[in-house]
Length: 419
Ligand code: 7TS
Image 1: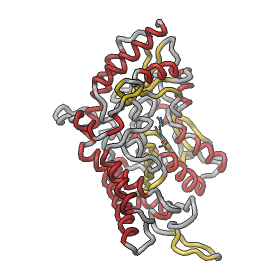
Image 2: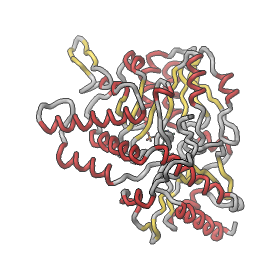
Image 3: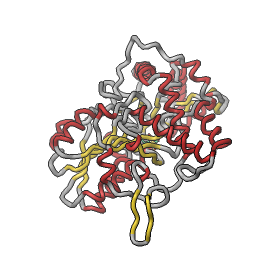
Image 4: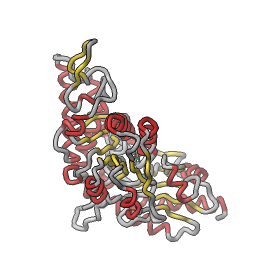
């Protein structure tokens, strides 16, 4: 399976969404007098009680710094923090906890690779290959790196359907390509990229591959051993966990050979003015006191989705997407961006005659939260020559009734604008 492309399996027992929704306190509120319909989980998902409770339990009872004290609280905090690392390792099927580096999120993980791996290895004759559908977090760090090293940034385009043009990828990939960095799932188009094929081809060309998994990890099971990429990045807050915590997976041999990118406590073995030695993996890349509560919350979020089953979550979200996509066909003047087969639960669109921001405001009056703007993917907007799109994203707690509310609110907006 192309991991994020979890084709709904009819034999799976469906999610009991009404029961799942009870776990998410934020969903049970009114916004502008209407029941909240939260369709912005692609930007950040809501958290279940289990995650909130785990964070609170740590803050109320177990808080102390990690890796430093022999006292009981420090040991409890360290056990919980390192326990979370093991949960994450198992969740993404990495070989070792040494390959799981906690970061602030996807953005920091990518910057870490650009600055540590990239800066120590790239020269002016080298190339970095990204795609036209990347989030800015997977563009700007490479632009900075290219500015620092003189390397060149190359871009694989996508077609109007939202699929990468693989023929162009093959042309652009060469022995000069040192790093291929691409998103597993596009945050604007929902496209699930053929990452297995890309990783294999990039490796044959001698390049390392970083996959931005920010939108893929919440949508389907990820098996990093099977994927065989060199780096994989994702964020906790899109996976029903806290903000300010994320993960960089790195192949152990690569991480081992990379220089640290930030210096400070915890990342050293010894410090002398004549020179310092660095800690073992993954601590070499975790300078300073980490986001302990965040990691514990992420570990709990991983437990939560694992218990529900990533395959069942994927099947549920695909059904919602199919249901919503069928409804788009009856709305005149609605243009959907991204129609790749097997795409993830992301619906980007525009309505003729209504600016996306106006639409977002009207929908908010109806209690419906969607995202409007460029979604930190300006090159995608440029591709379609639009300033912004409206985007609804579907998560494990969304229902068909909520999609009905979305389309009822869209009808209302069209009435207001006489479109
Ligand atoms: N990569 C992708 C594919 C993303 O969707 C995002 C965030 C990031 C990287 C950055 O993640 P962070 O947690 O480090 O900020 N995407 C979005 C979005 O689509 N709307 O708001 C944030």
